[in-house]
Image (cartoon, rainbow, N blue to C red; front, top):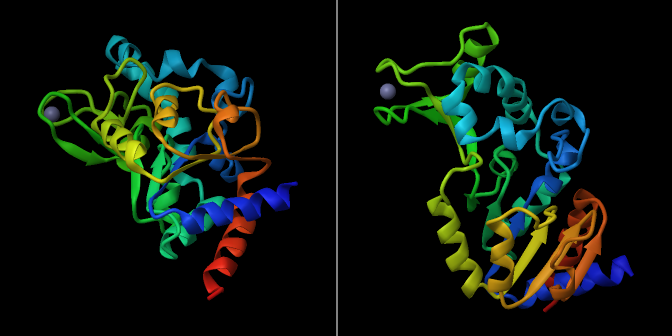
Length: 250
Ligand SMILES: [Zn+2]
């Protein structure tokens, strides 16, 4: 059944002129980054991410925000891509997908070689000062916090905040770009997302055709033409082989 579905999906990719891939936490769990929606896993067993990584938590107690999130940000920003990330980069290189919209903030798609990546929840490469708008690299800030100097401050006195979308933040511009794309693409391929988190779950009904690769159920399974359950890394690796085989046929 799985083999048949991978063949069918490869066919859909070959037919589509504009495939958008939407990725979620499931593509990074194989890189050792825990999905915070899976309770009691790793770093998230000690805290409620919605409470910690919120706009109000940062403004209420910036030192606490940075001190508690530093180990999480560090783990995410030192992780390495896995076979799923490399397979998606390969599909783009072969012209089989146009690009990726990701909920992940770990930059692993770019590290694997993907060129067109829209990060709808931001990223951990940098931070900015809301006071004066100054930008800075994230790594020195994390080192500073790890040494007990928290929160990291800009030369203007403002507290830096990471360039990620926090809970309670307004919708980022990248999301509007993603939504416009979802409306016009030929195929939306969801990989490793449970599609529970707004606003990305709103992208799915906008797309004309849908395929889903995910470990567990999603609330959009009924809408998918192809639905494959299992580890994203293995499935994507098989999909690349199948799709490249189709491309070689005259
Ligand atoms: Zn500043």
